[in-house]
Image (cartoon, rainbow, N blue to C red; front, side, top):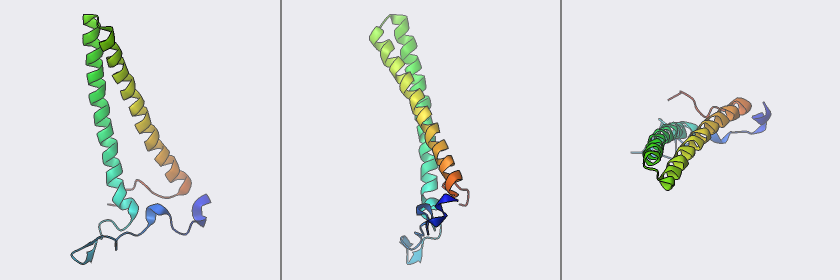
Length: 114
């Protein structure tokens, strides 16, 4: 691989001695990647939930204001729908960018070693 010249990848920095709990090293997160993986996955789930809520609210705003003839309300609903779709595209692009970086570098960012 291209990045084999790097002696130690940042995602594999040992951090088990950074977090001493009661004098014992934290063995649950021996590397930085093991610490960040659950956080990153939770961010993806939360962002998807926000997308769904914004999609429903934007759709309701658009439909309700279209029935009443309120052009400003329709534009706000259309803006909410557009923002939710672009947000979902950004979420998927971030996920697949991480997958591509994993493939190119050989460093596992999302791994199931917990």
